[in-house]
Length: 505
Image (cartoon, rainbow, N blue to C red; front, side, top):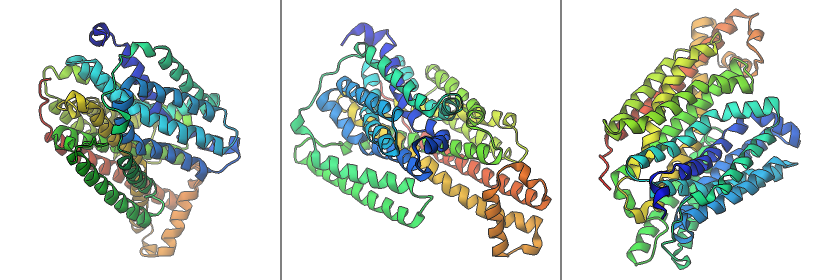
């Protein structure tokens, strides 16, 4: 390996970090463009939402196979194959003339390409840098996904409002060209295994298990019972996968996933921290964006602009975090970040009303983003800190799968919480402002229907009772969402306390 690149140049980091950014951006920037895509492609909302869901689904399902392919093909080669494939997918999506072509380009091709690139970004960085440089590099790569997810609505809003959603994919294609132009700056890593070592059976079992798991999670808010059944089946299939992998290793063959890696506490706990942090961030961002667009009636651009303080806080504190590890442990910095995120959630829980302004939300969003920046930036580094070099590829796959599952779960789980919050809020609001109808199920259903159909806040001004009821529903529901997010971060805090100090490499 080129020692100059290894020791001093940040170009390899920049190249792979760009890949992390566009993969995560792809999952969020189209959220604010759905209505325009429906018109342009003459389709319906459910079809576009399905395409978005399958992008996440396919990426997660191929993650473990991709991690193992690094050992057979080589980290750099697999990363570049994924990048080229991603370019084909994003070009196809940009020029798509119907929903089917969009699905092929975005969900299918980009989904597989994203899975090929994600684990490779972590293992390339961890193999290129060492010591404090590795901590900084993994912090930047680790937080890129979160920054892209947070900035996605603003990016999508700018594209949709001033240009077209197609230009969003075109911008990603430009980034792909930049990565390919600077591909020689990425160090080479020789393959360590042969094609005969590939565990085809294990790959199929893991693929089925992860597909069922993510599909079940994504469907939770639509059909809870069948989705829960699908998740249970997925867990059984993944347990069978684990058993198969253990038997395969014991028989002297190379497993797709070395289950012994889960004996390392930092990898096990760190992956859970990453999963739950992305779940909390994705869910909170979804709920806040929904409030801004449905209740305050902000357009896509203004919605993205309002959530920008969260992105700024995330980025600033992610950059600061590695420098603090010289004086404090990874665990201490992450625990402080977790407490900050909880404070941010509690600050926000009191701010959602019909008269809320974007300036009211800024402090809470910034504190929440800052706390998440501390946690997410150091999580990958401490997760794989004790893993030997020959197992880094497998570990990066586990870590990336955790992140991908967290991103998938956030919107689905918070969607259920929003529904529960609205239903509970209606009952409370009717008891307070319309006691004569307390216990009247039909009246409560009428309020729910009216609440869902309200076009603008101005439509409510003629009925003060409805204004009061809707206001308390909004307050209670959003407070409930932010309190649940705070509880999630409380679990993250407990997990962080279980992390061990990284061993000296």
